[in-house]
Image (cartoon, rainbow, N blue to C red):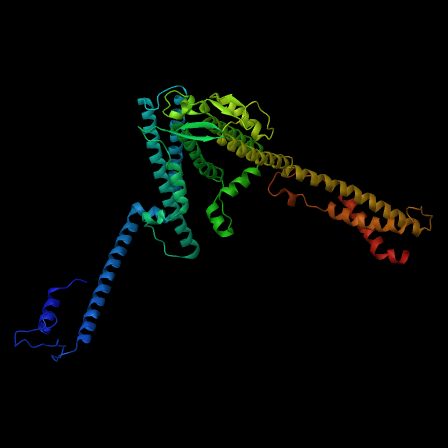
Length: 496
């Protein structure tokens, strides 16, 4: 609340005893005056002053709210912001942000991998070419982080649109940054994508275990972290897989079925290309685990330009085994050896001439083995799905069964009529025809065959190309069915 000149004049008119208890007339104390001119006590004065302050605060709050509403209406009325009220336009913008994030992740992974490769070739980690690659990696990291923020900003707008369409809640299209900052998934993706090695930065990390010293260049660990960003491509792939579903957002809202990553995986595994997807996934996993295995198995103590004093000791060059024996450590930078080891690990063979020597290498081998078990189970499920009959094959088998049932109906009808005719003419029945169980089975089989023979092929096609069969014995079948039904249900009791 801010005082106005009128309020100051009013306070002076009421008496200066509130500010200066002693007035000019002999130092006497004067009480504040009310509206009628009579003195009032201090509690009434402060009550009136508090009501004035409260009224002014409410008035300022109303002015602020009206200004905010005016700003919101002005922004939403602007044609540049109308797309925020369209679900299709918001989804297109969300997809563009995901593409930006994916491009940043790919560029960062390529630059970090090049840093690691030229480091293994003997280049200095502080050379100008290495700093250029680190600068490119930093720019790609900034692009990736900006894309992640834009993606989650559009996700917040998308969620508000869904609530507005489904529940009728008011739609707020202005999203401050703090709303995005309160999302946990945003920080997980943001921090995972922000890890990189900036220019003019290079150092080594080392650890010692089992009597051996292993050291890693920060460039190698940065390449491994940047490769993990490639998981951001999965959402782009899911959008591509689900792009052929018409009105999937409306269908998802009505049926309460989320078309998310799990639905995408189920659709891939239930398609006719499931085996291809599983094989490609295993190949990509072998490449990733193989490259990561090589990064954690190479020690920087055996690379040129190391700055760790402990790398000159014997335990940095000669590593010990649990049985007490030692061997000379050698860096195997040949990528195909690491990929061969991961191939036999993911296929659950576990036989190779490559052995992990570091704790990180053993950990990656365990993860690759568990991943291989999952892949083998998915291959089995995909093959089982591949061996299922297609809808056209199922239709053809159903038509064949119908034709077989029509033949069996005629045979059963002929046998029933033959038994009835022998009984009518008092002929001798065979032991099989005289068996009551056989007669009962004939009746049951005839009824079942008759149901199967009446299957309508048009109802089985479900939009597929139907096979039109010419029934040349329809009249005979109807006649046999009429005669057999008459024998079974009208004369069977009298004959027995």
